Image 1 (tube, rainbow, N blue to C red):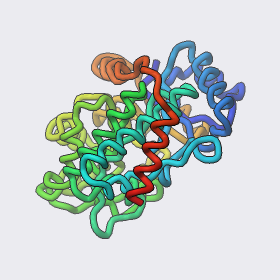
Image 2: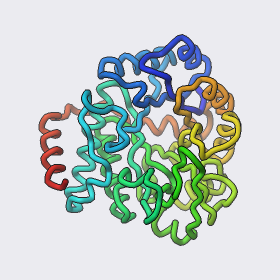
Image 3: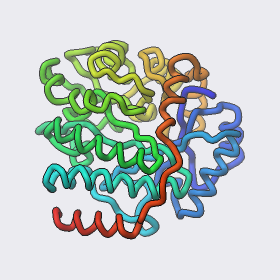
Image 4: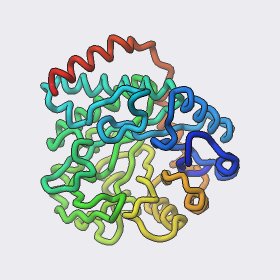
Length: 332
């Protein structure tokens, strides 16, 4: 079992993908809209890929609500963006963030998905790129921390493991890391006051995803994903996160170099797991070559990360949906 997560090309595994999964043995697989058609199809796909791997491998997805919702209408209900929750009073907002995530967990578990890349704990800054925007809970770090915690708890209550992102903070970026490398020139004091607190408050969560962002006050030469200083001094040190640290997608244009090199630099910086999403085997194969066999502390973190995935009590789906929709309609 190697320290990487890969994407798939389409709605079902082809022979090349089956062989790749068998030979490369990734820790998990992540799904996108190109992999999603119906409940029955997703359930078949998750069962098939686990059969190909020969174990109950984690299956991940980005199911945030709003703009980022891979399982979408008409086969699944639409969920609001994270920013919508803040319109409610504090206690009600946390309840709704929890309930929305609990319902998403129900949707995901129903089709064999057990990891959701949520909550987004970035704090958007004035003038930052819209790539984060309403995906974040609040511009107030304390509110972002509490609403993000509520969402994470809702997922775990439904047997789905959360992944907080994008540690140590993507909210100040003035560029989309999918397209280019963002450079944040904020001082260490500004980062300490605004960007880090939501992650510090949630440092006990099982998994986190790194940010492909350069923080010039910390390491002017490397994006956080590939920086020993950012990972060791900030994420592991100042923030105190000791869970499973995975990279953001290595195929994003914020990173340069060969795909093997991207993977090796991230692992060398201290990330436990590398993520490659687009399903292109020509890229995924060198990523797999650059990802080590899971062992030592990284293996311990990977095993512990899934401990919150458990059997859950039955959910009154209809009653919960009604509560959620009525309440969200009142704060629209």
